[in-house]
Image 1: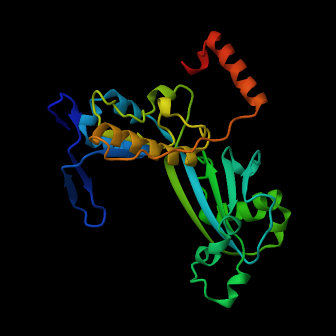
Image 2: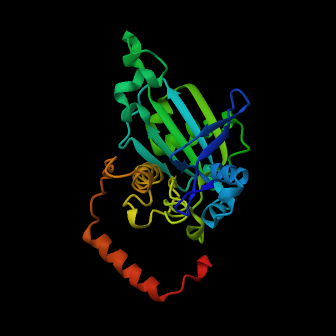
Image 3: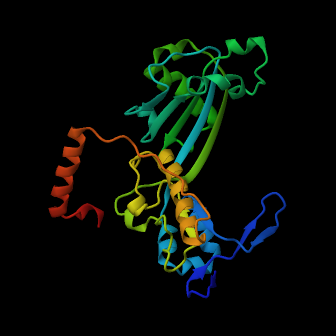
Length: 289
């Protein structure tokens, strides 16, 4: 960071490790930075940047921890019809304390089924391709020690057939498993005050560094997709870019990207939220201290 003529700090140079060459690369004369990072990425950046570490907004964010996640991709010999392409596993003993989801990619991306199977899409056999299922386990510490084949077996023999009985007749053709420790945002009680603001350290301190991701505090730019991690991360990226350009561009050199709002909640939901807000304005949040 360098101090500008306006007395504010500005990010002017970025260095990073090129994992292919093993060499440190440097980008000079940068106009701005959006830190689109999770907790582990933030920890890595702040530990390598004494300048950012001096700012409490970033050092507090670097103190947060994440939860484990396991991602699986399953390929079946036939198409399995489900009521919904997006589904949730809940209260299964096989989850060992984790939460689970499964998405029918062949339904969500039916026009790209061949590509999901790694094919070019020109073969007559493409119509015979079966379902492709993406399964994720969140807070998966109890499953991380299992072998890949054991995780696949839990899905194909227990979880999927219990959720949709037709999976019992489908044969697994191929599979892939990825395990990622501590990478998913953990919205634990009391963590809100530590999460990085979208504005970073603020326009008055460091105007050309912003933050994006599902865990950022968006302030007045808060969006209706609060509980939807991927959607909120997507929206925060646009808002971080808007904020960066607003604080660094001169004149009318940019057009702010319009972020679409979610549809309004039903009246019953609005009333419930208002009652909760009023109750919590008097009841101390002792469980988050």
